[in-house]
Image (tube, rainbow, N blue to C red):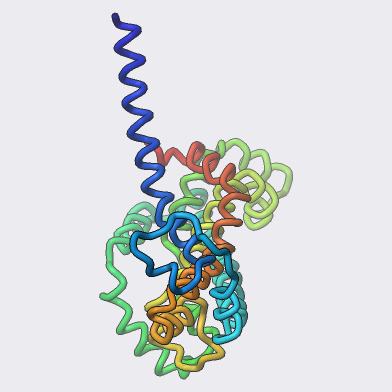
Length: 276
C-alpha cells in the first residue's frame, strides 16, 4: 500500500509540473506560430494552433519597415560594454569585501545590499538630471556608464570568493603573488561559473532595459531594440504577425545564450550556497 501511494503521489506531482511547464511555454509557442501566420489568420476565431499557411511576411515587414538590425546592433554594443564595466567593478568590489580586512567592511557591504531594495523610480529622476548636466543625453555612454556597477553581481561574486580557502592566499603570498595577480590569475579561474552567470544576468538586464533608454534617447539611430520595438508596435498595432516576428527576433540572442551557458548557471548556484 505504501509503494502504491508513493507512485500515485509522484504521478500527481509530475502531472502538476508538466501542466505548469506547458503553461510557461504556451506564450512563447503562440508568439512563434503567430509570427508565421497571415494577418487574417492571426485574428481568426477560433484561433489556430498551427499556421495553415506558413509565411515570412511578418519577418519581411520587420526587416524592411524599421531599422531593426540597427536597433539590435545598439543593444549588442551597449550590453557588451555594460557587462565589461560591471565585471571589472564587481570583481574588484567582491575581492575587497571577501579578502581584504578593513574597518566597517561588513557594515558597508550590508549597506550596499540594502540599496537593492530601492526601486528604480526613486533614483531615476536624480540620475536623469545628472546625465543631463553632463550633456550625455542622446549618447551611447548614457546607456552604459550609469549601469556599470551592479550590487547583485558584487554579491554573487563575493559569495563565490568566500568559498575559496584562505590558505590558498597565504601560499600565493609566500610565492610573491600580489593582490591583483592573485585576483586575476587564481580567483577568476576558480569562479568562472559565477562570472558566467553574472554575465548572463547582466546581458539579459541590459538587453531588456526599456525605461531608461526611452527617457534619455530621442535619436532613432541610437534606440536599443526594446525602445525600437515599442515605436514599431505603435505603428503596427494590428499587424500581429509582424509584432510577433519582431518579438521572436528580439529574444533570439537571449535564448541562444541561455542554452549555451545553462550548465554554468546551475553550477554557480550550487557553489554559492544561494539555494540555502
